[in-house]
Image 1: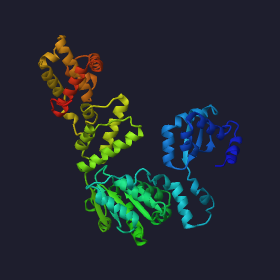
Image 2: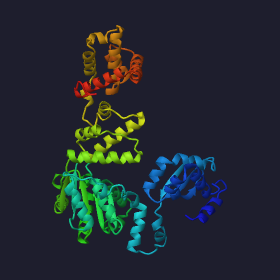
Image 3: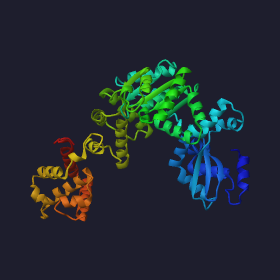
Image 4: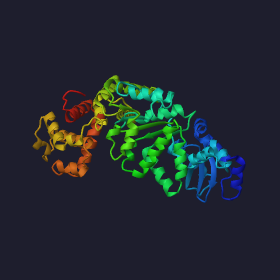
Length: 470
């Protein structure tokens, strides 16, 4: 929207903001040139209502980034000029297509598609620039899928369709995104999940827009559909997908599909669709082996270290532990690294191995059902060489109080039991006693290194049945 239009809109209502340019100058001054040039400059003023204003940005990604990080500050700045402002809303406007859409009074198929993409699909057709071939880490478990994806991006219709399957968090979406990213400059690319395809299909039926739906999906050059297994049981949608699939193959378009299982294992999917999938190149991504897991952990650690200006120190011992113990998926590996970094930044310290095990206990398949209050009590009693009856008694001798408080503290941090539940398991003690015990141990840990070592040893015994590791 031009500055003249903005000024005209503002003059129509005496309660409107004086000038959006003033707001922009304020944002630049108060939030910094870097943030303003990178994000806030991209905001256009659209319309003002009684208690809110409508702004626009060009992509959903920019909108999400601004609203999650800067919206409160923007609201505060705008309220200086509009006291009754209660909220700010954003609209996605693809300015690059704006003039084409305005001038589209003819039934030109290309322009029709542009308008339809803008209004209905653009926000779902997001190619993530951070997921590319050059940052996809390969190993024996995903090498074939990577090479096939690379080949498709170099030579369209070389393998058609390309069907990639594997478990959750193995990198299927990364590969599909990489293909879309490498081809989007010279081709019409549609990257959509099966769930979103279904949503648009139903929406088009309800709005009597099936002609546009068919035209859009059948005129694309590259169709990437993620998580095709979610199409199960939707007969009408499968019918439409089958005909779209055939139409694209006939015109030489490339189709890439991902799923969590092989084509013949898909449930409640028409046999003719499964047959089409199996007729192309079918490749799987297996669970990452130790070598690949180690490469991923090392690469992610290096990236985070650069991002935080070398303030993060994840030792090789911890990297090796994470690579060895977390075997399920790549996503969980990255999640583990992020948790360790968060721990380091929150507590301003390098975590030891025992602390890492507690932070990652759910990822290490240590089920809470294995950590019972009875196990904690027995372990603590054995460690301090007292009987369980002595621990649970009402006696307040020092040699009993500290083990009792330690057991209560460990129960609080290693289980999800509530304070009253913990109190009942410790001879019906009041919840205030439980709180006092937890705070006492936390305070002692800060001052007494022996107490810290004892807690770490007990954690290892309870969680891993290991006596000496700290």
